[in-house]
Length: 293
Ligand code: PDD
Image (cartoon, rainbow, N blue to C red; front, side, top):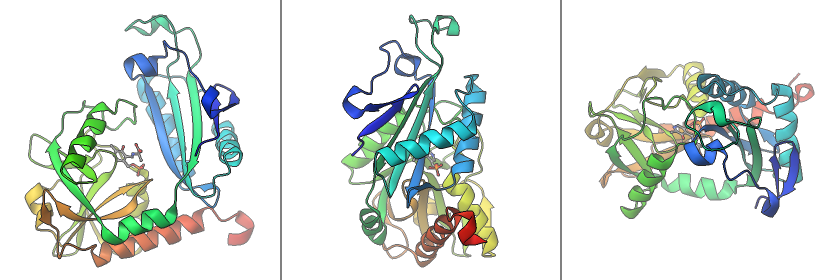
């Protein structure tokens, strides 16, 4: 569990890690966040997560609370103080706190910054990946800027709860055009009968996942075919394979969509291979420079 949380410049015990009652993140969802995988005490794809965090802040006009170097020190120290070897690190930045006001005029503090880390069992995740997960689709009722990683996660939370009632582990949001956009907290992929890896284009309607981007690098490296386009639930159900990607799931095979099996109802071989490749890349990336030289 999390023992220590970084809050606005100090490391506090979990039970004492408090923020202001009039924080705009709390009142307006006026905050952004990142979730990164921690592997052997290092952050996987740290540069990309930092770049996306900077973009999210810019898009909302929240001033950057610290430099990238300072972020890296806070992240490392939070991981160290929580003794996390494998798990996640979570960063959140809100616009700050002050008397409630829809306009930004009420903000009286610098941005609120939180960083926490907790262990996550890799064996547990592998056991889930061996079975694969089920998806429940539902209409996308989120706002028009899903490309910004804000904490306005109520639609995603409700969708995932609804999916859970049907026995599914993830929700897929479907647009008015009948095309799958993304998951509640992951990007959506299928593999066609022609072995094309298909995922929706990164528009304002979806989050440009870091895992998605790294997987695209891998697909190009391995000479596989990537097609960025939407697909319907019917196409996904009839696909050879399906999977989701996120920092917490990596490449997670999907074996059932809206109660129908995908392929033979077991994780597909390409999804499994891509998951393994992702592990290799993640492991290579954080080796110290001396070890890779
Ligand atoms: N969610 N799409 C949405 C809506 C997400 O919330 C996420 C990540 C992704 C995948 O992004 P990435 O590969 O960078 O993790 C796509 C995180 C894990 C979360 O909210 O817990």
